[in-house]
Image 1: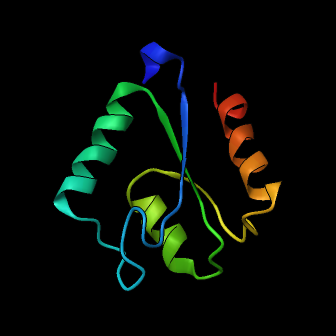
Image 2 (image 1 turned 90 degrees about the horizontal axis):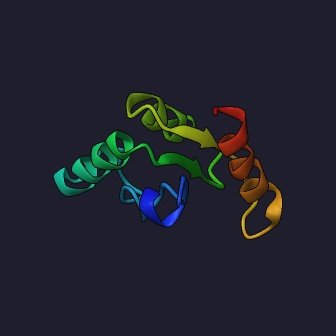
Length: 88
């Protein structure tokens, strides 16, 4: 991805990284998260959730996190994009 100029991926948590009913990723997803982090691609979770479990999950996996994003509106997406410039 870095070779293609992709430096940041915005991800949803519930039913994307993990099922809505848990905060434990599959082994395959956990491996993918680690590979992306090692590659230098920044990962930021953008979630509509108001529950603390999303923040706890993101902290455990060293992921940036934006909650209460109000997707599909642009607020959360723009906030995620700002992570690219803030953490250079």
